[in-house]
Amino acid sequence: MSRRTKIASLIVLLVLVSLFAGFVLGAVAAKKVAKKKDNPRFWKETAMKQLEKLHPSDEQRRKFETRVDSAVEELVTIRKDTVTRAEDVVAKAVVDIGAELTPEQREIFDKIKPKPKSAAAE
Image (tube, rainbow, N blue to C red):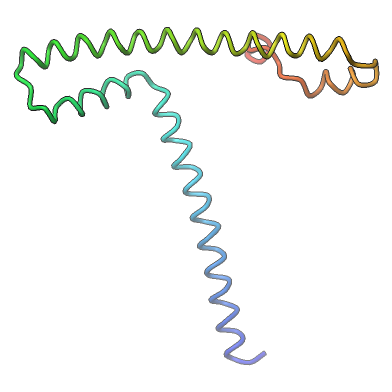
């Protein structure tokens, strides 16, 4: 193998390793950001940072914080309700689909169907 071929191979290998490392690090970072966005405390901090751009007085800041707190609580309630409703829709679909299956299909479906949250937590 010539010296040029070895150098080219090493450069290609370096590029491939860099691409893989970038993909893995990007996936990890995206997962952390998504998890952080699920936290209501993050919602409040973000809203308050945006409101700070208005240069509010101390009195306004207190009023903003009170209103943001209540908005976050409302959002948490809406989110819980939405998740519950979505789980109900999926559960109903699973029951409806299960009723149409043959015994052989039902065996396979029992393995692949979504599990209820209460069963998944156990």
